[in-house]
Length: 80
Length: 227
Image (cartoon, rainbow over all chains, first blue to last red; front, side, top):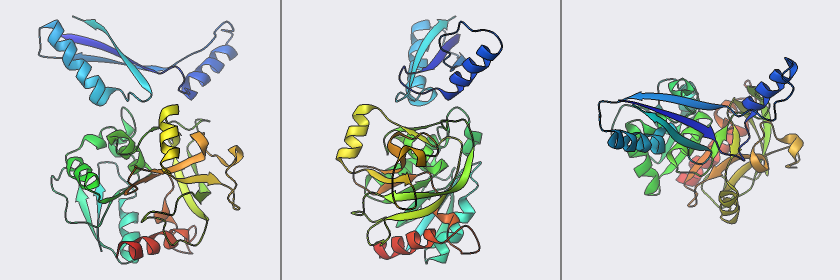
């Protein structure tokens, strides 16, 4: 099954890339943007067919490799 | 004194480090990331470069490579382990030193000489260096040191800030901070001070015909302290 995960920067971590994207959007005329935060998205196709087990495994992957928990949060958004 | 430099796919300062270590008397061996056993070493170095193309997060893949189990055991049993630039990024990913290295504040790759202030000389790396300030070289895109408030307090309480960006007189003001690092931090120790991670490259400062010679002070001092 396929598990989808998003990784986002924690609230007080500086995101220079998000800031530049915000500035660029502003320059393009999208002037009502308050803030842009950039993150990562992963689709993990696993042999495990039990949603609970697969989700647990992916959670372990997030903690051990996909996210650095000092600066990032992860969220499993889909399992199907 | 025996040293080992670990080469990861994408390391590119490994041979510079080899030249520097040998110049100051180390018997150095190059160790491949896919090896399991670490040769007997008095010093292990994780060199600069772009291990695994900086995929995912700088240093994240390299920190999980086969040799790193032995390297982590070596450091946990008191062995001297130094990570330079990408090596520092690998060290933070292993958790051997606290914090992380983010993208530089102004999104620029920075390549220039900088001055760093030595904050703590009660350790094997900097003991007996007479200078308070050294001129080193930096070349990085992700050197913006970040840690949580609690971590920062702990780091400062344990005197773990090894070097900070400063001017030639040792003033550590924000204007001398090239990359946005918290408190101008350029390098940190683990609690026990046997592990050192730093963004600057001492191995690039070992010959007057290169950028300078403050790296010579560093390596000379290091081998003397290890003897």
